[in-house]
Image (cartoon, rainbow, N blue to C red; front, side, top):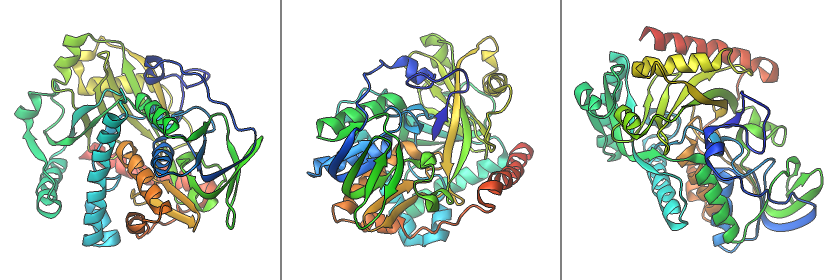
Length: 433
């Protein structure tokens, strides 16, 4: 998700609670002149940094170019919920690639979550990791689907999930809105900007050269790939494209298979430890299962972070702070006296089937996009998988490349209006239950 401030002109990082709660680090030098590397990476988010770190640890010389600051986009300002799986359901993957490969993809995702936690521990990244995630139904149809998912994931994927009925859920969550919960103890949440800044520090310690304020304006493809900026260029044996929604003409064939969708997050004023913990007693992350979902969790300084308000046009919705507050109070009426101190928003990158789109454009140009709102854990997995493939072990990337991806219809002019019309139907379905 690449997010754009909706409140005020942007400083080094657009305003958000994340940016205000982290120290302002000195900017890294922009690229000047010509450089040579084994691997050139575009984008200093989770995917680019994890790929760079993994490659540097394998002995590759890596140069990473970031258009703004480390984590300026999705990786520094997302909802912070790290969830096993992908943006699509497992039955979608079964239809796309068959049962055996769908199982492999899910096992890769479980490993991606494990590696995320290992990365945090190994590099001493202070990013407020908390265990636990609950998917909560509003309508009986959604409850039946979640109960079926629990049984299916246990039987077909050996993955343990718990069903909490409404009384059990209300022991942990002070809201009457939901009928129960599918609880995943292996998933959780973190401070996204703290995590991405920690990743950057780990990558540099491993030998990665990182340039900020170095937007790539052109990519030279095979036989000798290169990333070109207004003031320099990096020639390399391999290129990794990790720009997601912000490739901006670098690889048009990727852009046609990805759509930016707006989503927004608010942070309340500090509630105090007692009042905050009364809302979510076990400090888990929570998301409903509507198409245009709400998601929320607590911060380390006892705020409620509340996200949602999906928007399928290019402009932020009017009255955003008011509508976000209304959605928050629909979940927690006891917060009627609480205001949102911060509101920010922007884009997640979705594919038509919500499945991950990772692979190769050429034998030496790799990419990952289409995290569809589930990038905190899976973007790091993408970086690891691409690093393996560059190092000659492409078995996992080969499975991801089996996933078929169609272009969004309508071209640049019509694809957004067509998506708006289609998504309006899903919102109506959520409303009617």
